[in-house]
Length: 110
View 1 (cartoon, one colour):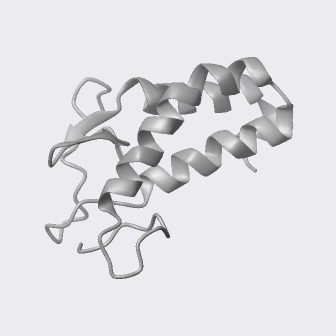
View 2 (cartoon, helix red, strand yellow):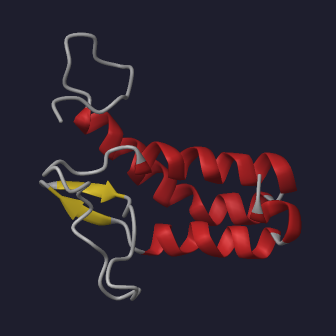
């Protein structure tokens, strides 16, 4: 739970930062950055793990993070503010679900 125990506002600010910087990658909008690269907010990294493949876990982490924040604080206003971004992140996950058992919303082919 980390930061949410001590500062729910700081926890929300982190989620809002990721939400504000959703971007398009491979024609899919709703990609959540893994890190901010070069230690600056205005230059996110190329979101690769050094092996040439993009991080695909960040969308699920962002979705669960916002849900956990809501459960912990009960703050519906913050959740409603992030809801459009959560939907975009879910939509991206759905587009990356290409396996023979579609509908698990887990990214494939990476």
